[in-house]
Image (cartoon, rainbow, N blue to C red):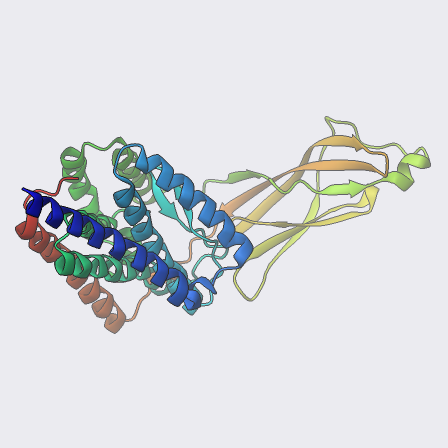
Amino acid sequence: MQEEDKKANSKSGSSKWYLGSAAALLLLKGKSLLALLKFGKFGGALISMATTIGFYALLYPWGFAVGFVLLLFVHELGHVWAAKRKGLPVSAPLFIPFLGALITMKRYPLDAQTEAYVAMGGPLLGTVGAMAVYAGAYATDSPLLYALAYVGFFLNLLNLLPIHPLDGGRISTAVTRWLWLVGLVGGIVVIVYLKSLLFFLIWALFAYDLYKKYVKRNKGEVKVLSSLQKPLVNVQHLYEQGYPLPGPEHTRRLSFNTYSDLEGQQYVTVYMESLDVEQTLLLPQQCLVQDVRLNGVEHIPTPDAYQLKLLCEIDYLPFENDKYYEVPTSSRWKFGIGYLGLALFLMAMMYVVHQHIGDVRL
């Protein structure tokens, strides 16, 4: 009995040592990856990571909580690495308890091939991370590490489902969009199996997006953007001269011009001649601007200056670039083989882990 306890303690100690070593290696040897992120932004990622670990630790052992979040972190670093290779600026990873983690791109890819490349980075590096955990589990015979390896393989496999905004849905754009139909049908099976409300919401949003794109097809539908970037205008000199300023409910059409920079980001510059105002606003996507209106003015008197906040509305038609989905045949084959091969490998590794310890339980 004492011998069994010693073995159990030895395995537990080995698994904890392995997790600690993995974390230390990630911090010490992963500097080249972490250097991709500015420290200030990375500090926020660390805070959200620690918070997420705390929430998971309420339901699972600490070792599993730490290991699981580290696996998420490695997965997101894969996206960061791929995006940086393509010259796309991205945010640091943000961790949300019980939802996962994400990064946001500050500039969208200009073609489906780039989108798929960035999407592929997450599952690829995530699989490498899960394999490292599996190697540790095999070496120490640790149930904890086996459980983490299994969850890591499953996490990356789930992300390969051809459903937007999962990685598989983005990779599908460079293989064939018919895979979205597979995701639409297969997603129902996954919902029944997982009994997950979150996954149902992801699938429902994906289904609605497909409906809008390929069934409803309102390509001529004008969208309205109530600008979140409300220009602040200093009118102290006009206020001191008694110049009549527009009231809170003042509305009028504004002159404008629009342009795009070399990175494909579109802007609109609006003019209000009566106040000698010229302001440039960022647009959320490539579009055809139809009209710009002033739809209210907020007066902001301060000790230093009298300012006006202009509430602008922009009518626009989204520009759908059909060339976005034009991918060379050779690239389609490469992405397709890599996508299918990675999915099969992950399923095989889940089977291997299952054979080692049966049903994975914590």
